[in-house]
Length: 254
Ligand SMILES: Cc1cc2nc3c(=O)[nH]c(=O)nc-3n(C[C@H](O)[C@H](O)[C@H](O)COP(=O)(O)O)c2cc1C
Image 1 (spheres, rainbow, N blue to C red):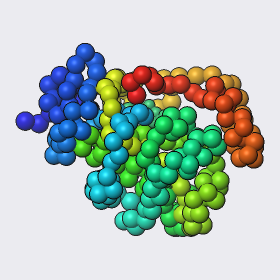
Image 2 (image 1 turned 90 degrees about the vertical axis):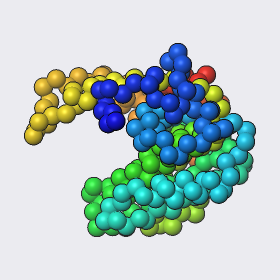
Image 3 (image 1 turned 180 degrees about the vertical axis):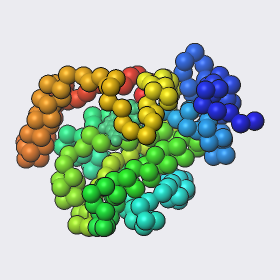
Image 4 (image 1 turned 120 degrees about the vertical axis):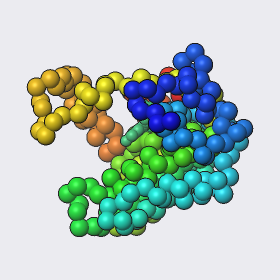
């Protein structure tokens, strides 16, 4: 039976237990289901930032990467490089340098790097190609009980390039933390109807609503200055800077 968006109902799928507004993807740890319907894997995946103690094996990680490598890439160049990170000191170092706070408790993560030497830099092809990989990775990992979080809250790219000795032709695009699901996940309703974001033929600016940009500008400047501070000092400031991190998720569940 073909199920279309408007008909999709989390109560009706049987890939991931769903009860009282909460998904329980932990079931997939015991019973991985890489062949679940694609639509279920998309609707039941939610970002996860706290993971079980059990480590994901290299073999399974590599399998997920090999599936995610079927993501589209600009000109079919397939120029990803994955820097896998498990070393406690390295993850702690990333945290202390001002990365997303939840990384402090993460045991496994990786940087997606992509060759930025191509003939279409104006469209940031390398970012688009690496991002497609990241999205595929998250959806595939979910089907086998592995939750993940796409992390953009990181020190400057030049700093990451130095720490991880990334080749000058490659750029780190994002970091993905991952691990076995530990708990439940709250559903996140979509903020818009599909029909409200689709425009016909031309961009229609009539009903756009913008939030105040003052706060955003202040944060932008503070962020810029914070990551310009030498790492030694930034690490000392970490316990104060943590208060300024945006809290947009439920720490208890996500
Ligand atoms: C480009 C990008 C950057 C992100 N950076 C962070 C981050 O730094 N910290 C974090 O906790 N989540 C980060 N996320 C995850 C989002 O917060 C998450 O996808 C969003 O809250 C929606 O939740 P969902 O993935 O469960 O739909 C990022 C996601 C994307 C696509």
